[in-house]
Image (cartoon, rainbow, N blue to C red; front, side, top):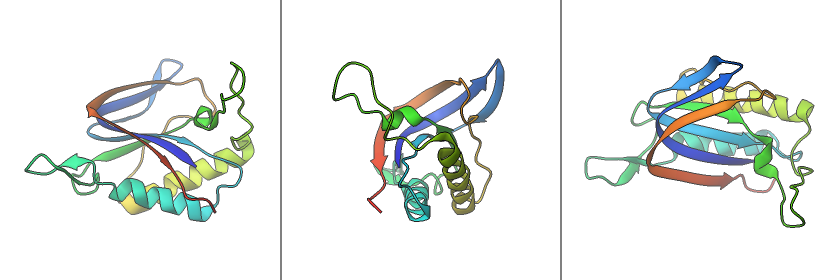
Length: 149
């Protein structure tokens, strides 16, 4: 599993002109799933996101988690994170989980994040053509890979 995490002041996902998910201050998480991902990798990533200390404390040090600051998390599926463009100019997506597998992993991941965060987690729409807008705070952007299973 690979995610891109962005600390945001706000973020929104629009599909066909309608907003399907939006948050205020918190984390925008773009999530890509591999065929070998399992419950253990989802749990590891969900815990990492909720506990990741990338929000500033009183001294301006990144020492607080999204949970500590009462922030929100918006999760958007993005299979292109698993692209391999090392050979040629057209990325290969064979490293991404096929849609039936990925949608189940995505739904399970969102449920785990909700359980750990203790609040609803807005999402994008799996498989849709989405427009994602955000106001990156910092900017702070991290790429995280789950450990091998």
